[in-house]
Length: 282
Length: 157
View 1 (cartoon, rainbow over the protein chains, first blue to last red):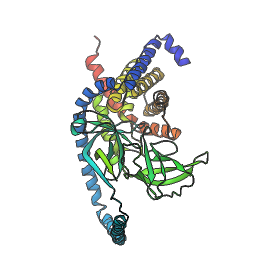
View 2: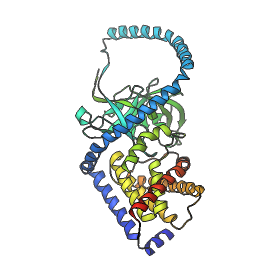
View 3: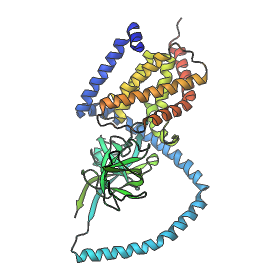
View 4: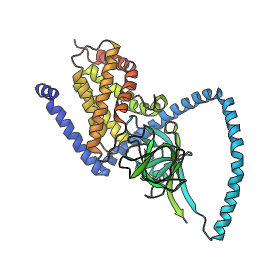
């Protein structure tokens, strides 16, 4: 109140009020009519994406050099760890091949067709990120010129990154799965329980995601892998989203939720793949 | 200003502290508001917010309104205060970031109906602390730049 009175007395009340009204009107126009926002955004980003590209190339170059110098000190220990991992995993490789052949045989016996995914992938470089801490949007250097359009899933070699929400000729904005506006249909790989993966919402800590609407009797445990369920049509089925770190009951005791650690390290995201025209054949 | 936003967006992931980016752009805007007062500060906040909305947003209003109001309130609140010691700068930027977070939350509720915030109190305080750590550096830089421009373009004879 004191603030408002002072504003009135100093004659700046109308200045502040006018700007607020103008911005609310700007919000109304640009959020309802996407074309208005696109006509402002496209020329702007056409100029800024090459600058973004230039900056990110320099920063990535320096970061990679620093990382490779740091890595020298860890190479020996890393080598030992990897050797141990190979020893641990080699029996599983044999089991995997055996199970694969058995599976193929059984499928043939049951006359089931092999499930296959046809992904048309477009490699892209991350050239910019939302500078704030509230939202998670990255800009990539591929757009409609490369066949990238709105609502296409974006993945990295580790798993799901997000999906495109806005596209220009040579850029696209990708809404990351940790953004609180993001929600994706998912399932637990082991138990096949379905749910929705939402961005950083309470009580998930920053950088983690929350899987909601899980059945109360679902036997989900820490370490279970979460994959996309394919429902919704944007993200194909079977893309790794992350790993369960905690499972709890909702306050109403009717549902469960899981805190999921994303498979992708979004801090180190440099290159991604946009899934173009994915088709699911059965 | 635009270059600083781009610089911030490319470099910030590499200097995260406990999962939080120092928001150099916000610190710069708050420093301008402290040095130049509410009118000039809010105009910088408005311009910076609009650029941020266009580059990273999906509509105009969210960042522009939040940054405009934050800069105005910070500039207005610190107008008649003594700004000498570094500790004061740290306190101003800390408070300014808290105001920004609070306004962002309110504007988000206004503009995004399905907005569901995360662990607010911890996030509010933590981002404010991270920004406060970097504030003396940015504030001094902004002060020197503003001083330089004032000296060369605003000298009264």
